[in-house]
Length: 350
Ligand code: KG4
Ligand code: ZN
Image (tube, rainbow, N blue to C red; front, side):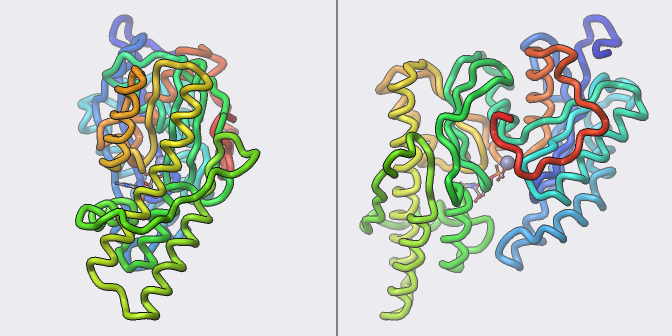
């Protein structure tokens, strides 16, 4: 059971490898206090960049090669002994199957060898959990998650309990950034590249997408993505893309993509009458999104929580925090059997 050392807090080792970052972290948790003792992320971005996106087979091989070194480094930087670990956590989904297995198998093996509880973590809820670290966030609240695999609005009724009120119908927000950037030749990952190009552009192209009928707060980015790619191809056929055109397309696409997030979240906040919103996922690093949500929340008197930039992308700190919050809410029922398998298509609130 956790808390081997009275008053010392529960030491959690967490691991993550669902996509293109191998990560491990050590946290010390007690009640609502979550202290980060170490945070190690080994990114594969340079390796995938030459292919314009994540190559799943390369990702899983690379995770398997480095997970033990990343874990060792997290324990070393935390200044703990491996026997100090009270609980082990890892992402079990959603994500790339082979990739997920690296951290999950490692973490289950560690929990087994230390005879401590293991908690399997939902990656999407972990992105949201990053908002609890060092803040006074408390449920209930609405969470807007925008990452490479998901765009969703969730009603968080507890630390780990939620309902999806708007989901991902096709491409996710981050995926649309990545695909548009690839066609524009801006490189991978597309989000930061589009944001950089957009800084010198004007939002002078109307890529407005009408809301989908009968889909509530669901998100669909494939129509916007196709419209932008068609625009790029037509412009290329006419005269080739100038730097100015590239910047304007990036700025106009970014505006349209963020409009869709803002439109759904502001309507959901009104309907659910909640006074707190938390932003999560890789796209949460986007400065324009952060600023526009800040303006919206100030106007509507809503408390806004946004993770620090370091915790917007994939990391293991959020996995440890999510595991602890799950344990706070559910006690021993939060523990997972060591037979827990990866779940590549796990839904946000499963
Ligand atoms: O959460 P994350 O690291 O991985 C997943 O769980 O999917 O999100 C990665 C996504 C990528 O699609 C990336 O292009 C996007 O987040 N992203 C951004 C920015 N930084 C990362 N999108 C827009 N603006 C950014 N600054
Ligand atoms: Zn993620």
